Image 1 (cartoon, rainbow, N blue to C red):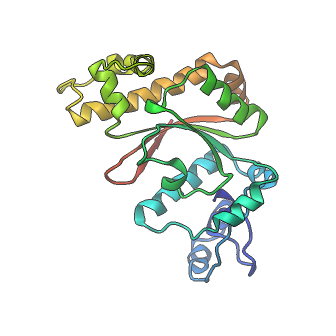
Image 2: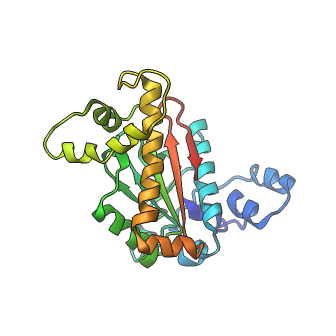
Length: 246
C-alpha cells in the first residue's frame, strides 16, 4: 500500500518510497533493496498522508504500476490491512475508473486496502452521484488526487461509437458521445478500428477531467488552493502499463 513507502519496517529499515521522498542517495536506496523485508500491511494513516504532496502520490501510483507490469508486486497481508483500517480510513486519492474486470485499479497499481477510494462505472463517466462521491472523498475525507482512468479496448467506448441502445445503458453511452465527436482521427472512425477506440477513450478521460473541474465548485476550490490535483490515465490491457497525464 502507499503506507509501505512511508512507514518503517519492524527491523528498522525504511522502505524505498520513504527513502526516495526524503531525498537520500541512489546508492543508499540500492542498498536498501538488498535488505530482507517482511510484509508491511498497516493502513495509511492521516499523518503519513499529510506528508505527501499530490505529485508524490501520483508518483507512488506510477511506481506501483511499474512493479505490477514487471510481476514484482509487494507481498501483502490483506487481513492485517483490513484490521488496521477497520477503525478509520485516510485514502490518498480517489479514482474514477471503468468496471472492466481486467482493470481493477488497486491491483494494477499495487495498492492496498485503505489507500484509495475507487468509483467504478462503465466508460468512467461522471454524473451528479459520482461527482458528489468525489467531493466527499476530497473535501471531507482528505484525498489529494482525483485520477480519471480509462483503458484500451473499452466496450463502453465501442458501444458509444456504434450508438448502441439497451435500457439504462443508452443514457450512459450518451455521456461518452461527446468524446466520440471531439476525437480527431485520420483513420476509420469505427469501433472495429482499435486505434480509434483508444483515441476516443483517452478523449473521454480528458473531457471527464474537464467536467469535474468545471461543474463542481468544491473541486474548483480545492484545485485552486493546490490541495487537490486532477489527473488522467490510460491503462493498456495488453502491456499492463498505465500512461499518466494531466
